Length: 282
Image: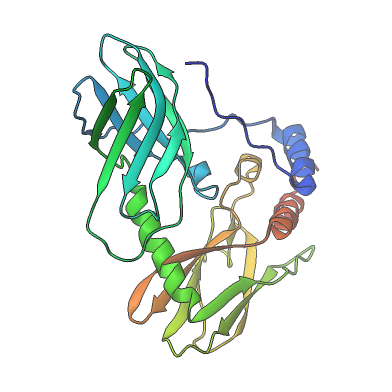
């Protein structure tokens, strides 16, 4: 199969410079992919199996992969792929391609916003073939990520009607812990919501072995202490979620976790600060 997704290019000069430092320090690390999912796909055609999955690095880009496994004796010439899932805000279409007999291929697609109206389950896939025929089946989520995505995004929507939560610019000293201010602004809609705690990231903690920072109830500006959690150049170089903080929230009695990343500029500053504090390249 010749059709492959194009690689993503970073636009942050700070991250580009940091990558050069890390290569000089320890060499470029090879990318790590999660193990292949082993679901039990459903299909109307026993020779064709289809399921959806997601790699960790695709979460922030809202990208997912539709795997088509062709166990038949003939190649599949796919014109288009259509995915329907009641947890998504609409049907999703992806370009197709040829999948040879006995082969599998992952077709990328971009996920729409989650649907939060609690409709009846409707989960299916459709392959539109070049010969005018279709293959259809029940959609299998190999890793269960769509359910988690829907719960998180619907909780975020509910939270946004009551509170506005954002990070200010970090204070990043040459020694001692940094400070990342968290602003919590009530929206005046009368809902009952609060931020309960901030969880650490793979890159940052709140003190030695401190991975959870409780947020005082009622405060609108909270100084969250941060320090490097791991001085491993490969962890920094391959960072995907090191500055995406999971906030534990309570919205009208429903509890869960929402992700609140820092801005792209702050991400570059923080990664460079971690590199300096860990003496990478020095």
